[in-house]
Length: 285
Length: 331
Image (cartoon, rainbow over all chains, first blue to last red; front, side):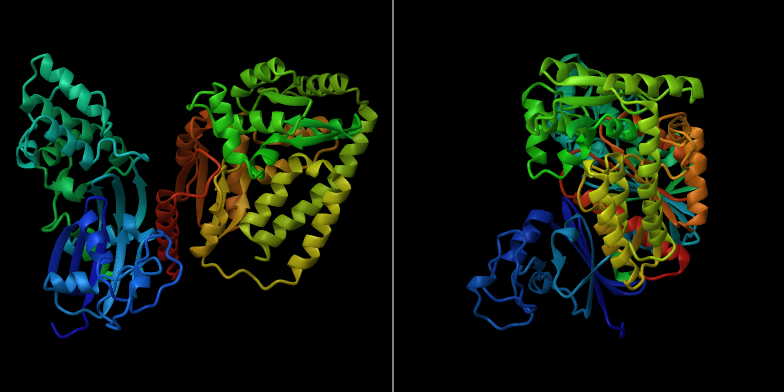
């Protein structure tokens, strides 16, 4: 790859996804726990290359600077310098940064351009699937987006409510309550029990009640998957999809995909890198 | 002049004719530095968390500003107002009901206006004289609106603030008129706002802060504030009854949709932002708008009087970017 490389950063609520490439060619990808990512970017004692001023999070550590390295800097002036971190991860050098995701409005990547998540995810899905007409369902850690894509462009979109109900975090919590792995969770779609509460917190107590009533772990996990799909289906139906593309961490869950197909009667396609879809979209963006 | 609180737009002409000065409780709540405290204070007194922030804010603001009398709209706005009236009375605030007749019937409207005149001690003649007086100001607000969408000289927030103030004319029609005159003179000299996306906003006035400003920062000019414009009584009318029957907000939704559709076309609007208030029955109107209006709609929800949150920003930004992309414009 001879062209200038772009680093795409999708700062999600659970994982920060990185992709480096040029156009549709992706040379490097990485995923880092979100909290670890921010901590690692903030650690270190050098001054930021872009010389920040008004630290919006009050945690600026640029004042203890001293080094003049362009590529070694902590978070400063509200901007996040990820050069140092990505270098640690062994990434190739890039010349542009495009970021998206939750952290984007709070923490801009130093020297980078920020684009809306909806745009990043749509671009990533168009690139990864080669499709131009589809309904994209991005199932993230704490939110869900349904995006109608027509002629390769965003036609309309809808996002879930303000809380994490029925999101990846909910599924994680239910699996953890039952001591099940995410792999096991992803296999459970048959004989779902009816779960009434998709709240990421209160859902746990409902599970405890079901266990005490004698429900099997598999049927409860299937119920959790089914409740995510039930919550999602009305958001999807408004676009009368012919093809659904599922991205985000939850798209790796086979049971959710299968239940989604049963619920909507529409084929569900998963791109090669569902979780990196937003970061890949940034590389294109 | 005696201050008389109002819970939404009512025939202000009758209040002025009675020698009173209307005070829109929404305005004194949301512009007060204590606006967040007002909501908390109402909750401490027992207002449920699941009741609209406007109601809670109006409650505390009325008591804090020592407004002795309130005209509460019991039909056509918000049914929470019924119980708000009861609580006001319990706290020693005098209340006067006003009802927009749902059937939009002339005779019913005339009797509602007569009841209000009787309650406040205003004559019909004086009320009609005040209609003519306020009409002069209302037509100047039409000019503010025209300078917004036709000439691009007025920001979405300025448009909202001035138009929404026509519920009470700041309690001081002369001062308000002078303020508009000064504004118009200044605004005409400005350069045109350069924004690739033309947005319209429908729904009740937003409780959150910075919404219009964020739209403009993101490359969109909000050149239509539906309900604020309706507060100005843009259709006029030969009598107060006609004027308040032409007002689209309190009645069945059909004429309101026709008005929105007309303005979308006239103002060449690319997309609509539908603002809804948490816990408000009007949230259900969203499904009607989505079915009846053939234009991209983004629905955003506000709860408390605070700066717009990251999620709202993400939605707005994506919506504006999407509309720009459709037009082949860059933002």
